[in-house]
Image 1 (cartoon, rainbow, N blue to C red):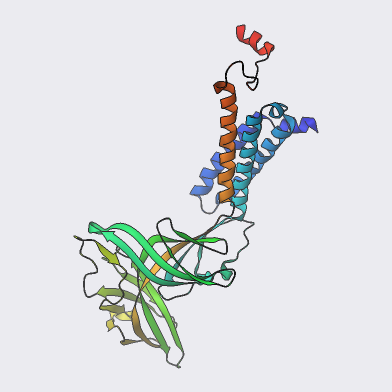
Image 2 (spheres, helix red, strand yellow; image 1 turned 120 degrees about the horizontal axis):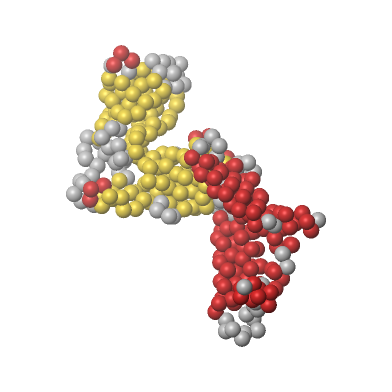
Length: 338
C-alpha cells in the first residue's frame, strides 16, 4: 500500500498530469465537438497525485505551510473537476414582453453530471436601455427582467455589465448582443391564429442591414427587412437605445421576388394565410451559466496562496535563530560543501 502511495505521489506523475491538462484544455477549447470535458481525466490524476503525496510524505507533518499549500491545491483541482462535470453554459434571446422558454436555449457547454433544470426557470423580459456615447461607443447595458424565486416570490432585477441575476442556481447575464424585433400575428386560411416575434440582426452593429428570413406556420419562407423611418441616434451626441415607439415598416419579400410593405397594424397575404404586423420590440441576448463551485475555487486558491506565504515566510523572513525556522540537516550541509 505504501509503495502504491509513493508511486501515485511521484513528481513525474505530477508533471505528466500538468502537461496532459494543458494539452487537453487547449484541444478541447478549440474543438467544440470534443469539449473541455476531456480535461477531467488529468484533473482526476492530479487530485489522486496530491492526495497520495499528503498521505505518504512525512515532511507535511513538520511544515505547516507546505501542508496548507498542498491541501489548497488539492481543493483547487477538485473544484475544477466538479465544475467541469456539473457546469453549464447556454445562450438565449428574449423579446421584450416575452417569457423565457427553455427549448429556445442554445447549449454551449454542459457537464456530464449537470442536473438540467432550465425548465424550472421563470423570468420575463421588460425594458431594455443601452446607453451610448457619440460615435456608437457603448457606455452601459441595462436590461430589466422579472423573475420568480425558488420560494415563489416575484422580483425585478437589472442585468448587464458585470451585473447578473441568480435564479435557482443559474447566473443570468445580459450580453452586448441586442436588437429590434417585430411582433407578427398569423391567421391561417382555416382560422387558426398564432402570435410570435421575429428578431432582426444585432443593432447598431448591423444597422445598415436589418434583414432576416422567416418561415410562416404554413411553411413558406419569406425575407423580412425592417425600415426605421427616422434616425435612432445622432452619432455626434450621446443617445440611448430602447425606444419602440419609432415609426417603421416591414418589407416582406415573397416568392417570385414580389415585395409587399406593411406598417404597424397592416396585413399582407401569404401562402396559406395572412400576417399582420403588431408592433416593434427590443430583444436581448443572455448568457446562462451554472458554476456552483466557482466561489469554492476562489477560497481554495486563497488557501493555497496563504500556505505558500507561510512556507516561504518561515524559511526566509524569520530570524536565523528562530525556533520556528526550519533547520537544515547536516547531511545537506555536507553535500553543499562538496
